[in-house]
Image (cartoon, rainbow, N blue to C red):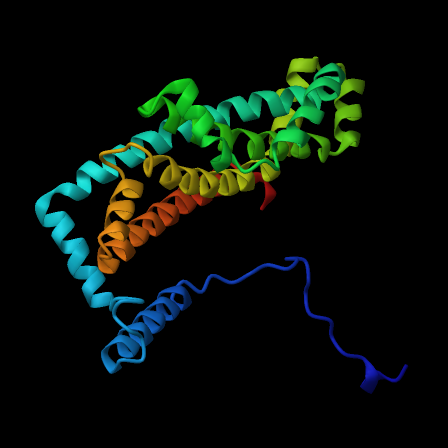
Length: 265
């Protein structure tokens, strides 16, 4: 090949790395809000169908001024944290058992596969019968919905750990507990932590559904009341609060991923 045909190859050691463009997200969000406001002010979007962002902001401001936002937000966050935490801890424990023990895999994996596709909202009336219309049924619904995706993510992560590393550790005489703690758990975390994002989103959906049954306070109860009164500005305000909760949860999980998965860099 002639020298004139030789071209330098760009360095590719970084893999398919992405650049942080933090300004793009806020700009897109601002553009959507501006178009939404413009459509409402020009009449292209009927106010009964979708209120203007300024009206939604006014509804949020009223919630803050009256102090009701803290009652609704506090009740929802308490249910979400308790249900999601318990479901996640149980899911990790069962997922590790399925991934590590043949007996648990043979006995529990088919049950998980059978119940996981069942819509958890459909089981909410059953939970009300079992645990009553109070906090028990709401927490149980969130726990149940969080449990199964965490189990699947956990034992899937254990299955994907490089077996060569495990055999190498065994050849060096590491104990079973040390192999699990130093190799299997860190190797499964890249699958477990993204599973948290899915389970958290499911938990928020189930939170709203549970709070629409017999709850005095909570974002779901607020949305249900706003819908029954045809107050679309308050309804969208409630949806905006749920979206903000989702963003905060996603940010927290992202921080956990950067801290716990720093070894991948």
